[in-house]
Length: 148
Ligand SMILES: [Zn+2]
Image (cartoon, rainbow, N blue to C red; front, side):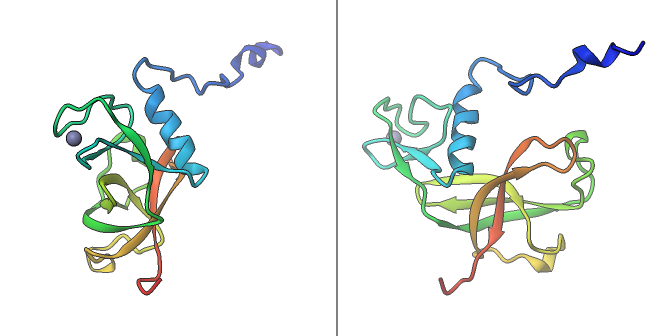
């Protein structure tokens, strides 16, 4: 009874090490450190890990290029009825923002989760924050001054 919790330590690896997902986790870590990057092929098509092949032209000669400091909101939606892993986050703003050659999908924080609180074309920075529901890392956008 008393020592039951001894074996319940949270695993250091977070319990998720699915093959093929490592590239994305590594990319999230880089983004969290302010070193976010895109994979860019010789033709300038951008993609994100864990891709190994350009989704546009099939090139495997992908190089890492730093993401711009700010991106632009392309589309967004206010989520009131979330999937279970976002239960404690709702309502929230799910957004897609263009950062140079790539589009990132994330949660836009720092605004009211209302349709008229967000504008397409808004400048945002990208980082990594914890999901309220379970603390898992998440791509998060925050508005930045448009005149920056
Ligand atoms: Zn390409």
